[in-house]
Image 1 (cartoon, rainbow, N blue to C red):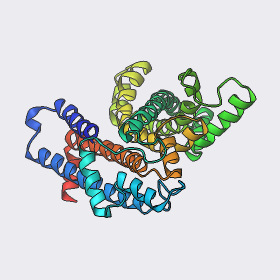
Image 2: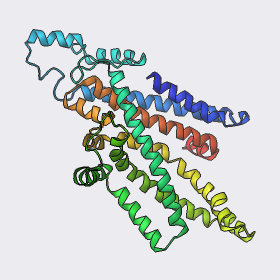
Image 3: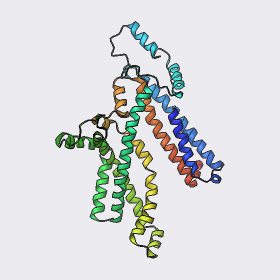
Image 4: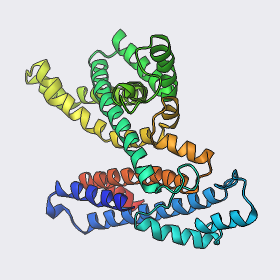
Length: 338
């Protein structure tokens, strides 16, 4: 929770730092405060729903153990499972505010959940970040190329590849890479290895990058064509500017600004959609940890993983929403009126 709150305040500081102080008027502060309150309430509601869902899931962390009723009662008292649901929730929230997410009840017996989830989240984040960087570079290049050769065979081919990339889930690409490059050609490892972290990460990162490439290339192509057909580009051509200057100094710069805004949500979606890829490639990330904790009914790990996914998404949307409102007051006014 401390990490989440620090991320919110640091992000807001970064957004506000680059804005002139006179623009930070009451309307802007009211807008930021409103978004913060809405996000905080949303997170609390999500926490309540997740807590109740986890507690009422079929099974129990101690169901599979051959214990007597007395032994079972001792273990339930140890983890606080004998208390009323409301009391359990209050205790959990109090502990969570101090960064304590409890201990693993089954999967990793009595190990702190915060360290387990933190280590797994780092791996998932690095994979997602690598996929975004690689996918963005390739996707932008593909989108620009398609826009500059629109209505040609290359544009059609690039568009077709983008549609395929958007339509097929990343885990299907992971499975194809696993079968062809790992099992058939044997040039890639079939599973993650801590002794070769970079080499064994090629397969999952490549699979995760496909969706990013497809989305970024489509968005870049659309924005690039819109910029190329704009009035100021026509005026720049009339002034006699050469093609290279038109493309790289004017069109590309203006077309890529909107593209950058979609990278945050893409990164969060990658982190929340890597479960099957991590399982296929045996990556010890957040998705694999969540699936294994569900199979073993480890309440604390399930709750921490699910809440972290929700918190990351809401925080990213909050930062983007506030950034939009500060950069473009029309968005802020429109939402306030709504």
